[in-house]
Length: 324
Length: 66
Ligand code: SF4
Image 1 (cartoon, each protein chain N blue to C red):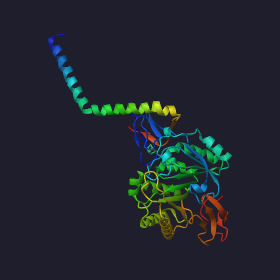
Image 2: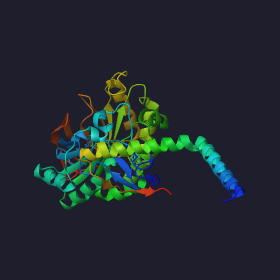
Image 3: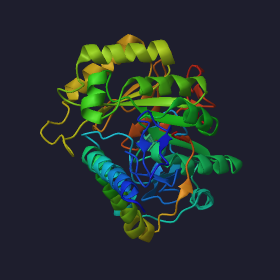
Image 4: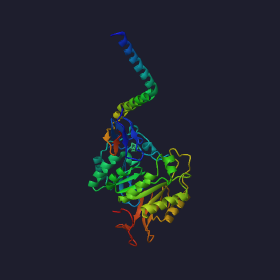
């Protein structure tokens, strides 16, 4: 019954006895060897507009072949995909889709990128890693939507194959991370810095939840940290919360709170701040120099794009992002 | 075997028995819990996971605990 192993993929660093399954539900110790239970077994496969991830500065109006397996390294009380993120792999239907088939299908459907998303891609690290490596050979881009809860060694190994990451920065307090998500803030901040250093294009999403993380002072601290550590060009998406999963008792985020958060972020010096999950303003991209409308969006649709070769079509200023 | 030898053997067996009873009282709970947990986990793997078509793929980034 010895044969204990320690998983070093995410900061939880589970110590697992023989036949024990990790906190993410996707890794098992069998006779002293750690195995993934979800390699090539996605429970969700879809073709999405890249704007849905959300990426607003990465190949706009292109299709992203999106995959996810069951499991997650965190346990957020507001999770929008808890049916799969908090499920065990054996509880959900899955497809047999090895990396080569993911790439083949992405090409067949005319996608420009493969996105590892819906649940936390760290839990299917090996599957993502092999797929991303193969996708590169076929000129497909790789992107992920992640909570950033991953150790730095695996992240550094993955980063050379990752073109962009949308990181959920869920709040700017350790208290929120431990009480609401069952994790820690510090490793997420380290991930952001690591991704930036590795040259991966980053966008950040912050879900604003009434009473839990909507304090404008804290939001200003967060945006100041982003400016100081990642730069002014990182797009930030404030997303509207709707009552769901274990937080059904809270109301949806008032639109005014989102506007205040956006203003605070712009005041901190960020150049591209968006509002998501809310019909109306806050979705378009304008040139930070001349102010001209560059990308007009409604929902996940791009109505017009005036960025030419990565530059503002009006004043010629370089617009940060990956455009072609 | 002479009486003295028989008596000594009896003494040693009695001492061993007492030691076993003591250690069972002290560690038995942990031992039983460990074994039962192991049996439960193994049975879950054999009866549920194996039948769900979830093939195992060796993971990256882990190490054996000494
Ligand atoms: S990836 Fe899973 S098994 Fe590994 S440390 Fe994190 S929660 Fe535990």
